[in-house]
Length: 427
Ligand code: RNT
Ligand code: ZN
Image (cartoon, rainbow, N blue to C red; front, side, top):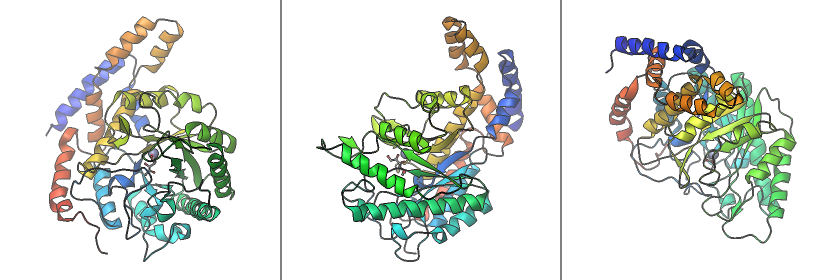
């Protein structure tokens, strides 16, 4: 275990080094308090939810691995989340999916209401963790053929429209209860495995369905609607109705939040480059920070070049108040609480790195056309003592420093996770 005193002396030295390049470390640390990451509930239970007798995960979502200890009940998921939050510096949010309601017996998705989420609202209040929300357009008999809101059958479309309407009301009630807007993100899987004969009609149906869902006026102080695009999925390789262009146009014309998921584009295409473009035309962005390996594989977020670039763009563009940062990964091959801690800590570490850049100096050099100096400084930045500032931030936030947090996860694994079977609990 690193001694608190050595963490502090390393921090003081680091501070001097940053000061020498014109970076105010205290100001950067102060800004870290403004960053609330929306931690996704679905890493904890492999996107299963609590609807009861659940079929397999569907609609292109795939979780692989069978690490023991999956949360099977709301109480288990909350307990796991509490441990995860205790390992992450700062105050963060929880991103819930509709299928995580607490249902006494079967309640179909078009029938859900705020009463099914009262347990989460109470928990979120007790933890000081605000909620975000998502309608669930997957893993359901009415989505079994790959279509929901763009379905050719008007009855099935209506079912999913009603689900969307119900979810917006739930999100608004959550936002009202917590005193800040609950972001409600719409991702629908609809698409074709093979080349469609008609790309147009499903898109027209999707837009019309969304318009019906969003027709009800709800206060932006309670909920904000976001729409998430995707290039392809398993089973929708040839065509996804809600493509980037579709939702870009939809968000601009309907004044919606656009959601960019890091795994939803061509493998060499990056969302970091899109942030400053789309924010010229949409009011706000939601990011699903994820990590695709060869495809939209939703690996745990690591401290990658793209993660750093995403955070740099947010800070360099001064967009913190217009970008909601959410996480979206699910890995069942490692300890799930550790997965949350790794991905969230990395995202925050990248935010801190971006805040510790001499942004103004870099931009001044660029304006002057001195690209040589720009490159020199950017490269030197990579070996500046970020770790010392990060350790200090963790210590002063009362969370473990370095890899110490793994000990807590291991203890919890022994005492709690290992007692769980991998099968659904009978409750
Ligand atoms: C799927 C989307 C979507 C989901 C979650 C569970 O490709 O990324 O955001 O991962 O809603
Ligand atoms: Zn996503």
